[in-house]
Amino acid sequence: MQEGQNRKTSSLSILAIAGVEPYQEKPGEEYMNDAQLAHFKRILEAWRNQLRDEVDRTVSHMQDEAANFPDPVDRAAQEEEFSLELRNRDRERKLIKKIEKTLKKVEDEDFGYCESCGVEIGIRRLEARPTADLCIDCKTLAEIREKQMAG
Image 1 (spheres, rainbow, N blue to C red):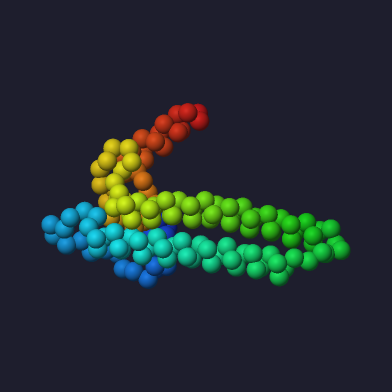
Image 2 (image 1 turned 30 degrees about the horizontal axis):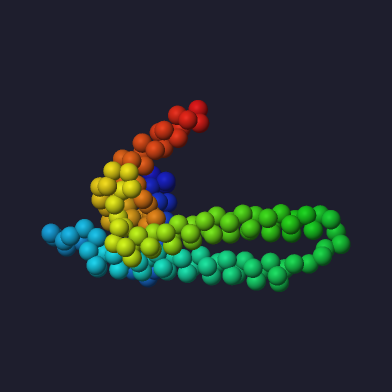
């Protein structure tokens, strides 16, 4: 139950970052019409901007906090903190690239379809993970294959 709640909170926070409500589909509405594409473009751009702001804050923080501590323990603690921050920023940099790739798909009106089988990924899945490029079934198969290769 807790894990499901975390996922729900996570997807809601992505929507909250963009300041948008979950998309309300209308009966008979065409999948990935202009309104839906604009909805996801807003979400992706807001998410990318938020990540860029975090990167800028990290750079400022590291410049402000950079001190040459005479105590080796203090220096080691600071270096470990900076190392962790840099690893996090590297993950965010990769995520920004994925967001930009996804924005290109939105622009090309090629967004929302599984790269493996071509079916619709679905509005709710995309709101939870806007950079998803596989439907649930193909993602599940990919994860099973990955586990088999690893074990």
